[in-house]
Length: 524
Image (tube, rainbow, N blue to C red; front, side, top):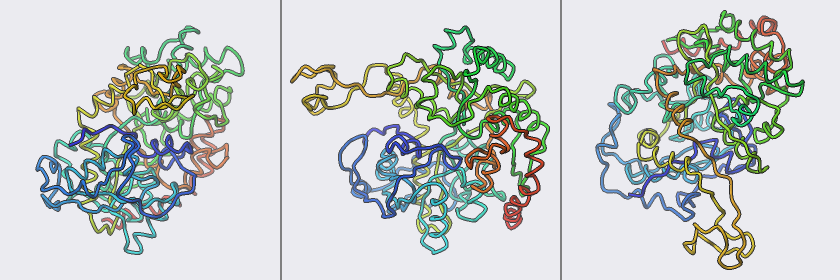
């Protein structure tokens, strides 16, 4: 069996490969390039291995090892091979997640064909059409609108009888699976749980201006709103063009979550609107002062460029995208910057450290013809994400500070890799220096922080239904539609009043919530 490789997750990988990513609330990244709806061939050129792999041929195995089927439920048929698994996604699963395709073939006797569609709302429209037509795929990627919007439309298959939430494979994320329950049923079993937005910053800048490192404050139990306030005030005192915070949509709600409160919560068959909760009021009134004082950068700036002029203290963004983009921007501009990320600071009034959570995974659509094949791919994704050897290999790669180079000489096109000379830094044919390429780097300290996020004794991760209630609802929450008076982005970026916006939109939002409540009532 080939050694499995850690690969980039879902939409982030697609964004970096195509270069067309832009942040959105529906799946962290959105691709706007034209895509084909034709199924992808099962013979695929792997991005990592750079040669063709016939996954259908690899799937010709004799039997399935029982160890691979741990964590399954009563409807799962032991020993039954996956066969053809039809997927719908906005990237080809074989080329973007080859390690999972390898595992599905070699451990479960299955192979993936991906029908590719565009991302965003068109992705869910396509899924709805296929389900309605009785032509459902067997597998789709999780995106924010999957819960609760798509689940309320009955687009997915509950997997309670296919997977065992009490098994060791799922036990450490049972609380997260519960937060995605709908009518007491569990549709989404993530492969991995991660922090949502973090605060990305340049450690060199902090040292130069004499500000504390948030990671030091976190280690000392002192990283809270008060410490954040103090740093932001000192930073912005340098001049009007110095900004404490820049970033993407939703930062206001990320701070709300540190109070332990969700904007919209689902408890059994109850869909709860918390927009009038005192914790949300308190958080947003505090943040709107940042907007009013001019502490925030109101206009959107590419995360590759936020730190180039050294005038922004923190960038609030999904940690993986923001951290990678900041590093890439420094590399492209030959700047000496040392980036790190810290949690959203703790609410001083909270009983524990709450943080907004993010997850990666897959679901089986309603009407899927090969439910077991879809479930086996979900098993692959979870096994792979928790494999100690895979994790160790991935981290070793990200900790390796040795330079990375392009395979060919920039002058004479001599191929270092094909000639087994990849360790050379100059060309043996023409003596030209090799061209370095961007290389994402982490530190042990950052990996330790990621481990903390997954430790329920360190953080309680919060998953809010607000993120997945559809584009119409999102227009009242974020600045995506260009409205400065939205509930969660308006106060942060423009200093607008949360109370005024909430009272103006509340009854309308209640009306928009009713279909979710009706859907839950049908589950009783």
